[in-house]
Length: 299
Image 1 (spheres, rainbow, N blue to C red):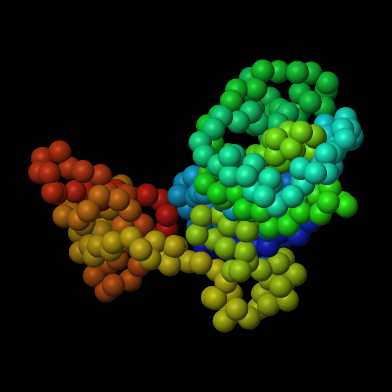
Image 2 (cartoon, rainbow, N blue to C red):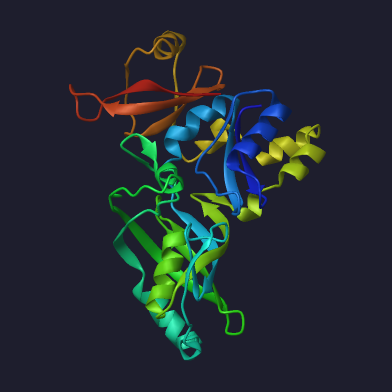
């Protein structure tokens, strides 16, 4: 069985741990899109078998998270796993619904963000956390991100915590958002908890735990319901039926003419059996004539 399965990652395990467990079950090549830190939980799309070839279509997805920020303390990793680096008093009068919502609203929009030193981004061929662990500093280039929405879910004056939902673009570091929120409240803060609830079209409501997968692995009805096949993944893409001659050319990587809108298509043979997806590129001879090229996403 090839495709995508949405795992609800538990706390205190790595994304690699999840890949290992799924690979043991299916006995196929397995990958993931978008690493979650060991302390984070939630949506982790896992690619199985030929589904690993879909990674090219999953790299730019927007995401949603629920995060809890702890105020009054900064850690060296900006999350709960780090060591306390600094403490600062929290002005409790600032912790009211109106003020917090105002600050969150002002944080929405396009902005430049500097990734935290404890991250896997590479600078000069070396991961940032490797520099951090060795006590070295390095200039980290800023990147443009976008926060589409920030919603206050809860706040606890006694515990000095704020829980919020963030809807953001690819590449956004929520740890950094937590620190910025604390700064805007006149104090320090770090990310206490993080749960990813959405990656593109994949939602936490559709995710299953590794334990649930293990318990139901031999139930074909369960697997058919939970594994998103390649044909289903492209269900909203147009389809094209190729005769035997064109299909042979297509599978051999030859560009073939086909009148259809530009984009990704589902390719079927003459008996309406799904073959694989293909990329459409505009043919230079006639404006409305296109050719199909194999995208590598097989059935």
